[in-house]
Amino acid sequence: MFWTHTSHWSDWCILILTGVSIHGRPVRIGISKMKKEKRKAQWRRKGKEEELAVEKEKGRRRGAVEEGEGAYQRGRWWRGDSSVVVENIARKHGIKKSDLLDSEADDLAVRIALGETHVIAETKKALSNAGINIIALEEYASKKTENTKRSNHVILVKNLPYNSSEGDLANMFGKYGSPDKIILPPTRVLALV
Image 1 (cartoon, one colour):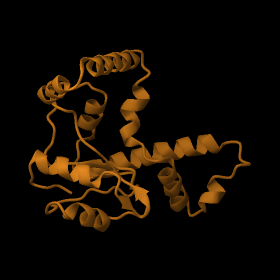
Image 2: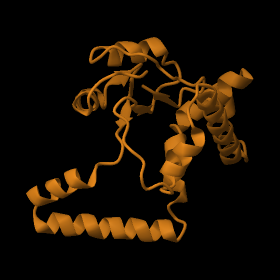
Image 3: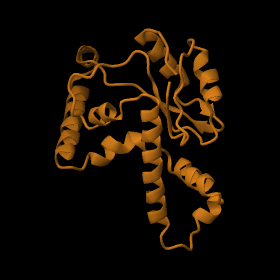
């Protein structure tokens, strides 16, 4: 769902709705990268020790990404909760979740990994069909673009339960503005609001 609003509105919406439960599951709402000016202003308010700790952690992460360890984290925003992946696989094949998660099976991890791959591919396809530029999202997630601007109109919502609907999202976010569009792929791993 897309709104015409200010960044103040989106910050307020994220603050209020983060952790709100839809069908018993807490919702995570992410914001885009903070502008350098804001970050520097926050650092001025914090103590020097905290600033050094933040810089040290950034350096550690940057080193991990350069060594290739960050590939999992960069692609993590595509992935949903494993229970949603299992729910997707079970419903798609018409089986019970308990049959899919049979503890006696030797290939449980392989089945879950293959299911996750399928869910990611299906999510990308649905977003692409809705007019979302998947390549730009992947480049941004892999930090290949430097001049990407923060959107004041789109919020990425993750950790949705499988039975969530566009109506649920419209009710939840509609309290804070009039939604223009909701993009909820059939996998229901994430939504663009």
